[in-house]
Image 1: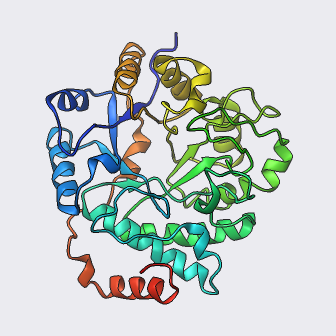
Image 2: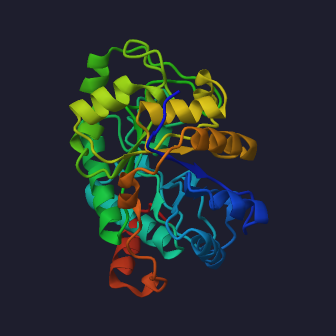
Length: 336
């Protein structure tokens, strides 16, 4: 059994406030982060209070949400309803709009006390994957990289670090890794020429990467998030990426190929993930925690890079930049 692994867990909670059981879980040193979902959210004020309650227990915990825009947007009531990224690409000033969109998203997420949104999606739109679809900026890899780069600039200027997903690309595989184990039968050369381009172009701007629960059998028999070939040889080696690697949710069906939650967290951390997400299944989170404790995992120093930079701002709607950014998206008919 591997000992002394670096890594930690990101977990979730069931409600809009913390239970005694939640507090006990969050106190465990092997837990390094918490992700919130729609069920945890009532209003901006309530999310700020939940964030504050979590930080009162563990000031160092990384607090995350999926706030991509389009159909993947957890914070809705009292927040800008962001467009799907694919809608941005059709505008003549798409790069400018992408940057404004990234800034608005990050500003609102930071204002409720969260550190980051897992964004942007760097998957290419081949019109094959229903789970990716309009979450993707483009089918053209260079154009996707350009627009995602602009979105990242907006995020960074608001004070948020960016996470590119789903490495090395989920756009070709048709199955949904939430409910199945997708396969992408293409060669490494074909993936390099297309899907890896946004990750390669943006490897220095991305603070984190999230691998796909997809098997690329011509490269490795394991899904990318459990593969040292993908994470160590290609992402860290070829692409020279030195940021955080977050696993995708280890409760998803695409992760079940390696066994129970204990096996999954061990496989993810051994392959090189800095933080493993175990969501929507408290029993699985507790099993993964027990495994992390048995493995004597220690937190990765890289995680500190993901901390948000601007929590105090709640008056952002009076900011001239806010008015300009929202106005630009309205003029382009991307938001109401």
